[in-house]
Length: 591
Image (cartoon, rainbow, N blue to C red; front, top):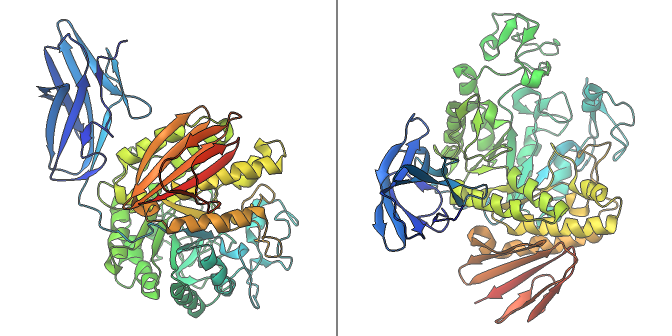
């Protein structure tokens, strides 16, 4: 159908993107046909509304205009209707957030309105995150075993050397500890790391610690609370802050709170309905049938509406207070969609008592702006609950581009993030390729290239360059900086401190230096070219312009530059680029 009208929320809306309440937005629709509609309507409804408001637009030069005052926060959905004699046309949202005309009403555009302006301008922005699964990063000094854990003495040995049983695999530990991290702070500083994100460090009888035994204690196999405080302080001297995992949806069944195995001297909920913790959990048939995370009975779920538990975490001298007072910079909320907005807000409010730039990051695998869970739209951004989330959409679409050579979904995702996420949140996003919950990307690329490690390494460099230069904060999962591979299908192997200084490590050592440019902290993103296997974009800040060029096709990418440009990779001035297949270049223009 001939496109008589066009709308682009990133070009035809002022201001673009997310706003805070009590602000005015101008919506402009370009109209290209001589046949005028009888009337053009701006259609809008809030999530809570059952029907749309139809508001007549003003005819102006080139199209139609409507101004709307947003006096409430929330998710607003809007569309455009053109009424002719006997029929109507709609201007629906396309998959890439642009528009298409149809004789039916399709998907709406989103206007997200936050309760207040975000003001965390120095949270994660401009830095580098380094994620550490403590047991597997570095072991320093003597580590004593604690039953039922099984301490192995073969650092780097196969994860399935002794068993493939998931219960016993999770009980085997290698002894990585706080002292080990302290011993590698100079190493992390050299990589430009500004934030260490630690997987859970609180007492738990597993190597992953997502089955908390005691929220108030650090795990003694990692070290003492004094040693954890030393890690925070020594990292701070290097300009590195510490963010910890907050696992507040479930505990371990082997915990002081549930105590199913009787390993603690507390009256756990499993042992008696008179336990002070009984109301923390949801029993179906007491005591053996209870709700648990994904049906895993070693992870009993917390009652989402239990005020006593929420106060234990967020109240005066609660869990949040304890660790913020020790000096951590914030929390990453595990499975945040499993806990209520009310609880997330309590966590955020308590964390931000220690400063507006403290981190409250959510684990969200989808578009966090419109995330629904338990049939409820989440208010992560509308109520300013989270100032960062894990950027799974970028991980998936970067890797899709790397595998297929087609950047269409990568550009679409970037447009979605610009329209749906508050600017400060976009600048704080945790951009990554691997985490403890995914497989190692370098192993994936080796499989993708049918075992060609040289080609896999080239693709890996392109992918990491994108993660380091797109909006957000790049995150390195320990070992990814040297191309660490899966161990028995798991990303949780031990760091190989004897063999890490390879070609990929040298690439990372160079690449991390690009983060010194302020344009990558909060600069605007402009996609310059996105087709035929080639993806080019720029980040523009005050007195800086960075152009990133990638090519995944056999045909070379040839571009001439006019002005003062320098290759970040070679350090040489450039007037022309000739980029071959599976190559990346980063060009710096200073004004």
